[in-house]
Each structure stands twice: as C-alpha cells, then as structure tokens.
Length: 35
Figure 1 (cartoon, rainbow, N blue to C red):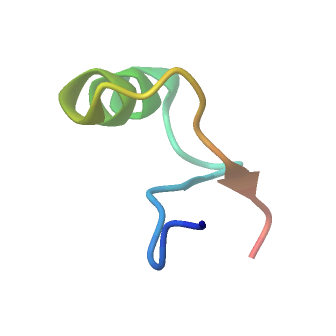
Figure 2: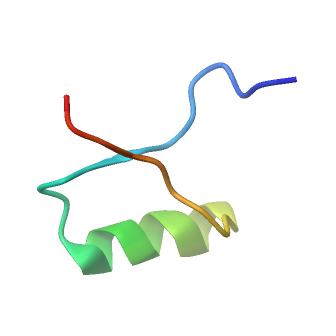
Figure 3: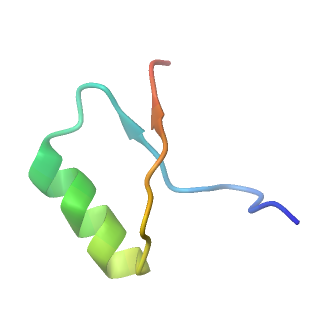
C-alpha cells in the first residue's frame, strides 16, 4: 500500500520547513525530490 500523494520536499526546501512538515504529519522520513 502506498500513499497516493505523499508529502515531499525539494532540494531547495529550507530545513526548518522540512522539519515542520515532518512534525505536523508525524513523519519519521520525508522524501526529497529534485523536480
């Protein structure tokens, strides 16, 4: 089972924004994409 629209960050996403996404969604991992 996969998440249809997973949260992800780009290589340009500030680290604090990525941490907020992870904290708000209770994620342990956050995919980082280059596109």
